[in-house]
Image (cartoon, rainbow, N blue to C red):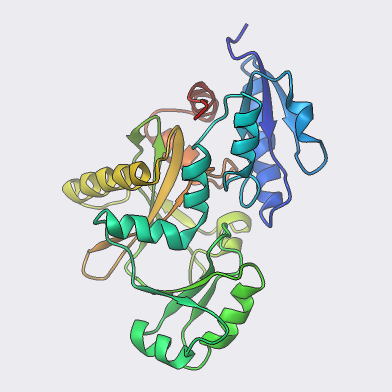
Length: 301
């Protein structure tokens, strides 16, 4: 007996990140079953949620809307099934890049300059205010879906239209170009920082999931004091949102070595390209041990 009872691994779902979730969830399922845990696949896109009755725990390997945004967490709360990751509020906040920024700003954490866009925005004015390059992104998508890098004056409007296909709430964000990094968090501990060096111009969907030439540096080569400062800040960023269990906080560095917190991921990827397993490995925790640890942290609000 594993002590976990009957475990549902939730993956697939209906979001734009379905394919990534299928990849994550199948690996999680295999890792749990390989340790003798009574784990079963569960795809909310093809199975009714009331079929979860009788399960003792849920491992959420869903990404994006209806998996990472508090909705499935609320359903599991109502069924009294402990689940991995953050609760309803933190999941909903973490999925909303705009409100995440507001909370972090209120808590005194540095975030890149940004502006909200709508169809009536003065795009030339936003370009002038934020400077180029800038990034345009839907507020409620992950995996770099719908994101554009705006480099040439006069092209922000087209980038807005692309992002607005995915979400009515669209953010323009100042480009912070000194490096992209991430901090995994498991059980209240910040894992070693990973520096991400895409061969593409920025860390887009292709670089995340389909290319083998993205470089991941862990150790990240930041000075020890700076890494400690950022890891502690990432824990604070996670705490401000009400995060629990596990997650990932992404940040950027500018050319002067100043860091800015970018966004939080409350249901991180668990694919063979994913960042939390990579950092956990450097910290001495292999993939099966990581999956087991995340499941141990399952809770209800």
